[in-house]
Amino acid sequence: MSSASSASSVSSASSAEHIIAAVALRRVFGAKAAVDGLTFSVPRGAAVGYIGANGAGKSTTIKMLTGILKPTSGSALTCGLDPLRHRRQLARRIGVVFGQRSQLWWDLPLRDSFVALGAIHRLGRDAVRDRTDELVDRLDLGEFVDTPVRQLSLGQRIRGEVAAALLHGPELLILDEPTIGLDVLSKERLRLFLIEQRSLHGTSLLLATHDMGDVRRLTERILVVDHGRLAFDGTLAQLVEQVGAERHVVLDLTDPAPPLDGIPGTRLVGMEGGGLRQQLSFGPGETTVAAILAAVAQREVQVHDLTIEEPDIEDVVRRLYAG
Ligand SMILES: Nc1ncnc2c1ncn2[C@@H]1O[C@H](COP(=O)(O)OP(=O)(O)OP(=O)(O)O)[C@@H](O)[C@H]1O
Image 1: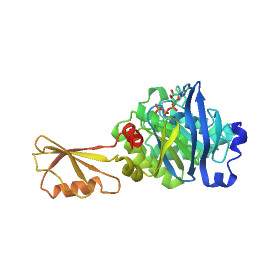
Image 2 (image 1 turned 180 degrees about the vertical axis):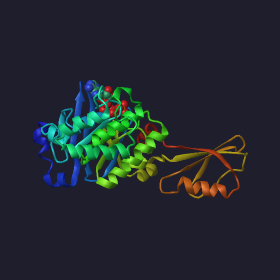
Image 3 (image 1 turned 30 degrees about the vertical axis):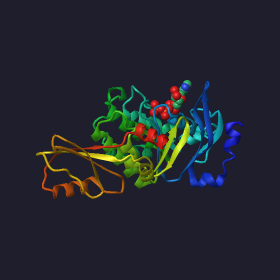
Image 4 (image 1 turned 135 degrees about the vertical axis):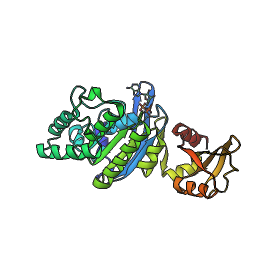
């Protein structure tokens, strides 16, 4: 079955409710199925994390959803459109960022890229200017918006990529590893911006990432893909319940202290240096870092430093299969 004819088999009712609808999506490279019969849908307005180990098939899925790659079989509708047949129309309704590959013009300053993209998307000059001003302000691009892209740092470039992807106010934003290689502050700044944009504009989000922090902050549902197949579809809390992928807070204390057990919502999972460093684990919804710190303060110990460790995605996927 061709992808064009099969895409039309996804009902139009579902395409109104769903920003993405994939049915038995499959893509083979030589003898290997990179994506192997994926069926899932994303309701309009939702934010979904798409996670999996290296080579699990995430980028291949995204390429099929955006019309870059033809499925070997199965079908996909993105914004109700067949991505291959309506690639140009689709481009006006989605924004895509591949963290590892630039979609900007290397020799042009960001501002000129925005003007060029505005022309491609057929936005009026005033609309481009207003939207550029908003994005420069919200993403703090002011210092480098007139610098050629090739001279930007990774964090600056990614902010530029995200701005470019949102210039035309897409219904759906697809991000493939947007925070890869970014330092903690740049990651956080980008996440806050994305949260704000979604609440302002109701943009749907599909986020492929290796970063559990991205998933936790930005999405409400998780799809786990493994060897091109869907291994899990549910909330982070359900995933944690199923595989026990908890967060850890590592507390470095100013003086050795007795075990910090019995802190509500946490388990003491490690102690070093006679109590100088203690590690507590906790699941989503059980407690917060702020509540943990407040409870620790009542034990009359002083926290000198703290680190929050997110569960490792490769480990989560392994445990999903082991269980
Ligand atoms: N153009 C291609 N030709 C041949 N094999 C490919 C091609 N693109 C992807 N693959 C293979 O398909 C599988 C899935 O790759 P894909 O890039 O979709 O995984 P991924 O989940 O995005 O991985 P990563 O997290 O490492 O980016 C891998 O085994 C990869 O080597």
